[in-house]
Amino acid sequence: MARVVDPRSDRPVYKQIADRLRVAITSGAYEPGELLPSEHELSAEYGVARGTARQAIMLLRNEGLIDAVHGLGCFVREPEPIQRLRPGGPSADWEIIREPEDDDGRGPIAEALTMSFATTQLERGRPPVEVAKLLGLPADAEVLVRGWEASHKGSVRTLASAYTRWDVATQASLIEIESGPAVYLMLTASGYQITGITEEVSARMPTTAEAQRLDLGPGVPVLSVQRVNYTAQDTQPIEVTVSVMSAERYRMVYDLGGGD
Picture (cartoon, rainbow, N blue to C red):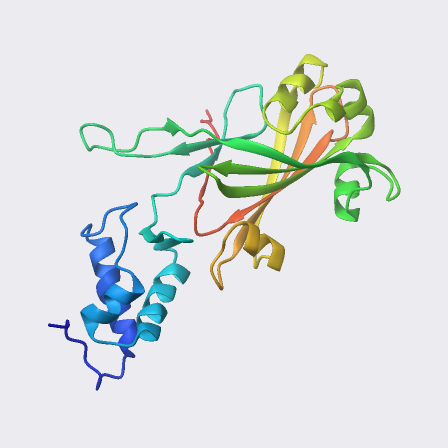
């Protein structure tokens, strides 16, 4: 017997189905990573057309509750990692952590996640006008442009571009290094240890290319993080990086330290 929905309700049938699935997900009846019923199964279960079941699934996907995997179905979205600034290390790059409950259930503990980096651009070029201003360079100056994607379990999580002063990039031989933490280790080894960082975080709607690459649902904004890196011996910044990530998947956590 089909489950009951109210066709006379002001709330569309597909939203009623989505409501029930949402409750099942948030209550834990469907656990993270668990496969949801297919459109065909929902159609039979609720006695509705397959298109109605598809609308319910799409609504939950747009809300960020489920992920669709081609050929396999829809799964309850796993808890997303938190992206936070790594304090005290030699790298000025991002550290990705997850915060599960500890064994006593009293609070979160940090767990490092394995990220993979894929370089998408590595060449001498001109930075955007605003980046050139931040670096204290004339508009026609050239820099090393590094573009990369950071992924976890095959899913692209961050799109990033870095603009490094050409004199710094040359001395540190960055043109020979693929993107990742090794870049900052090489900078430190070449005498360019980053001792100061300023960041500007803003939210905006993604471009079409960003939405496709990050697999964003309709209406999902992105966080744009502009980071300016300084060293103790340089009066001007040595590098500006711009990272773009899904606003529904990340929150920014900063350890600013204590004061007297």
